[in-house]
Image 1 (cartoon, protein in one colour):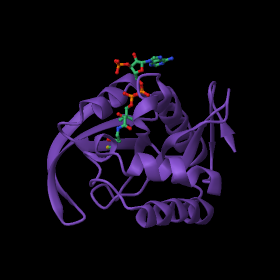
Image 2 (image 1 turned 30 degrees about the horizontal axis):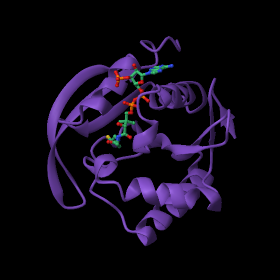
Image 3 (image 1 turned 135 degrees about the vertical axis):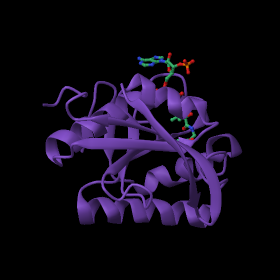
Image 4 (image 1 turned 90 degrees about the vertical axis):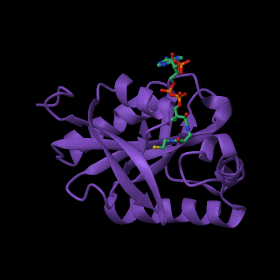
Length: 173
Ligand SMILES: CC(C)(COP(=O)(O)OP(=O)(O)OC[C@H]1O[C@@H](n2cnc3c(N)ncnc32)[C@H](O)[C@@H]1OP(=O)(O)O)[C@@H](O)C(=O)NCCC(=O)NCCS
């Protein structure tokens, strides 16, 4: 278990799965991440996330609010095919928990983890170019625009905006 000022970052528990399925079924949340998921796919994703963390000690973790134990969403580091040389930081919160800085707070932890504990020298973040809220998180984290690129995920092409930050710029060197 990892903590930040307001959050607990930990593997998924069975008690998260209803809220995780609800956010994964919400078209607003899933607009830029492949569209709504069925309950079965949502459960499968949570199990895959836990397996990934156990196997490699990086990946997404569930995000819980410390003050009341409410499940907010998930975030973390992932290895994606378009940036094989480094890890990507990402986030997904239930719609009712947007607007409180939770994604930025969790992601700052993941950047520090990547630089300090995994020894990365650079971390990227990639999103659909129209996903302005995600790009705003990147900027709040101090990441800078690197490039746009036409990428493919699950057989669908999309125009991606890629931000990055180095350990040095993040103040870790
Ligand atoms: C991307 C996503 C995580 C961003 O969520 P968010 O709530 O906008 O981002 P943050 O958690 O950093 O919150 C920032 C907002 O909280 C406000 N805020 C309130 N208290 C704050 C605090 N203590 N610290 C920082 N910001 C705070 C900020 O002013 C900002 O508000 P604004 O958007 O009105 O300017 C969310 O939109 C989401 O889950 N989207 C769907 C999934 C997705 O697309 N993921 C990205 C795939 S690449």
